Length: 186
Length: 418
Image (cartoon, rainbow over all chains, first blue to last red; front, side):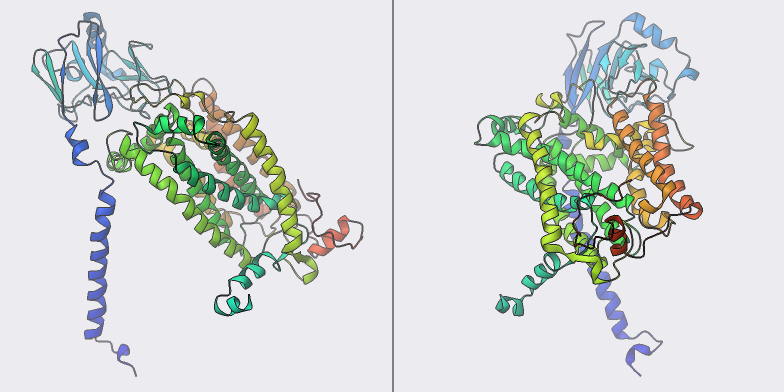
């Protein structure tokens, strides 16, 4: 009859479990730095806010800023482009959500919700196709907006997905006009 | 030697595994690709180690350091072409090896673990090849990495965090290049470790052979050396001649011109294509263009692509046939070659742009691929009438050679090739 056959847990059982538990916690705590080192570091995160001077961007012109390693399209749209975007029936959109980080996550994808607040001719969006991350070409494709050459996704003049495999509208980053000629992204 | 053997039986292990080890006497040339793969793992590790002496894993200078290898480093052009084309030939060999296993039922009991280890090696090879392709930091490197890591964003909720964890930033950048280089250097040694387990498992169960009949007596086998050694060696030489031809006459045939343009994060090449050995999987990824219930098309494509490899893990249990070798399964033989054609067809579709009729064809090819493993394999094993099996390996060999009885264990003819 060995001591291990007793039904009652004894002090040795407790010690086994306690040692195992402490060991497991220790292993997990030690593993965390080895995993977390792969995440973006503070220097990378610090690049998460940029200022862009848009005083030179006339109507119908675009510039591309680089934010978090990704291109951000900043475009002062023509009146015709705004009209085209406003004329679209929301029911015909593939993705009816604005995808605007400055608005609630369920905002409709109307042109006003896609454009800069109070300055509807300005469109600021992350120029990355929502399919697999290619960079679409500006002012081309069947909807006069953007066209991704990789897999044929077409966006309209408000950067909304209209045709092709991309699932969502191009994302609007958090940004604000700090003055009439300066945009702060991030 | 005896002195060493008494203290560490390494000489005995080598002798038992690669000299005296009994191999079936009827192995054909399809069975030489295991040795070829071991050779190419060696080639890749050797050329890789010397290339790493000249390469710089920094996004500012990586592209130039590769050009410097090509132009300035003594023999650098040859070493790099050996490494780049070596990856392609590695995959040619592994695909022949995998289809050999499927044809001759090498995955069936008692070799399931052997097969699963092989699939793990295949996955590690794919990861290694993908990360290696990023290192030259050309346009295809950069955008290939963007698209492939973009797969992870398809997963709801956690997708974006996983992608940032892999990239070390919000887009492919220096942090990504550094970690890919580190892992690209590590993974081949992990492959080598799993290869040792793979060979170990092989030597426990013994090799299959074209008849699929287990070895029954010592008459069925010949010693590994000289028979298999010479045969493997001859196949290696022939394979290396093809390899040399590619290196010296068509070194960039399998590559993409776009990768000789330095990576530009603000400009996407018009047509992103992976290396040829990933094309069938790329075609399956793009075949899913519609939402399936709660799964959107993007996630669906990613799941199908990963599923196409995961399904291989279950092949030993999906195949219900008691007959090991396809040579004795007249119906399955047809389906096997349809599968081969289907994979080549998918590869061709993967190289085409995703427009017009191509996605529909890719969908058909994908459905057949999964249908083969999930429907044909289990059902056919139950309904098919196999041909009569030979009583033993020796009987099959003698019948083939008119009762000659000569020790023709290393006979060259792939005698049961379908």
